[in-house]
Length: 499
Image 1: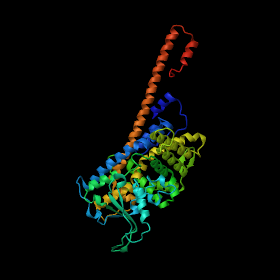
Image 2: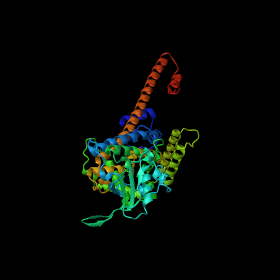
Image 3: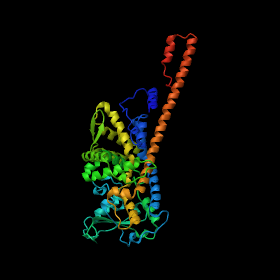
Image 4: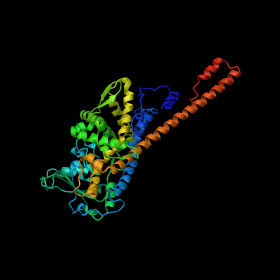
């Protein structure tokens, strides 16, 4: 860091805006992302860093989705069968009793409490107008809930098939029931409400479990239609994680916000673990420092704010209107309504403008001298939260539904897990593997960026050194042949880098 600071001073002069002298990554547990961000912070400015975030949100999503799905298929095969290719259990088939789950057991972030067609639904859902025919599983699930929410017959409601909108063939049948089938145990009769029943569609009754899992994974779109990937949903998720912007509008309770903070803290611990670390039960418990952090995050997100460290603590918030405007910009770009630009160029411009607008909103209450730093730190926060926010997208009903089905196959039809933390704990190999795949993509991006700009600065230094050496040589020759000192001084003041 000292060498880079000296290199910056030689090639660029003093910093143009306030920066921190401390590098937190030097004092923590060895978080690779934090270290690379500290390194990059000493190398490049706001615009260069923003360009790379835009590149991820507009061009890298196909690669990210492909890597996640490839890894997920391998993990599910190992997770359920240890390399064997078993048949689908009879109870999971279209004529069986199926998998019965409480809605809260697959919707950890309460996505389905928001109507896709509501004022802010399009910030959360993809293909939100298509209902049961949507290419977004979350929209499809909400639509089945909406269809059946008034049927109070035990285990009532109508099943809807999923798969044809993205794969051309149906894979599972899903049915939401406000009132489940009463069950009797030693504790007496009980009825679980808000139940989601899942069976294979008759098309898949005779398929192998491996074929079922692979087809289901292929049927899921993580970031929108593959012909039109939508990076704004990741941007929305990051902003909500940082500020609680959407959570305030949706009206999430402190209990729900605490649940989400706990999920993110567990994921953060997993992401910070070393390759050879054993992920034991301690990763799913919280010490006093973590509990304080969780409580602070809950209180801030409940208010829709983030406390920034500048000359003093700065209270910042991002109005929901900023996210609405950003998503509308991207929608217009996707429809190619921006001049003569290609769709890809228009989307890049839309995301760029969205990030600038949100960064400006975060810095709106900062003092003039702090504004550049606050905006720059916003870009760093986007990158820091990128991995976690993508994992949150994976842990939505679109894939948790599949994980839950495989959990029941592995541990038994009546097996249960107690909320999202227990779910992650009991599926930790699957979650760890997916988390590391996403983290590796982000680290690769940061490392490539750091090496690129270190190389550029070194090349400039060597070029400047060579120019100075040649200039000194010319001046020595001129002085030896009797050229006037005034002329020599004029030559010394010339800028040799200007062409």
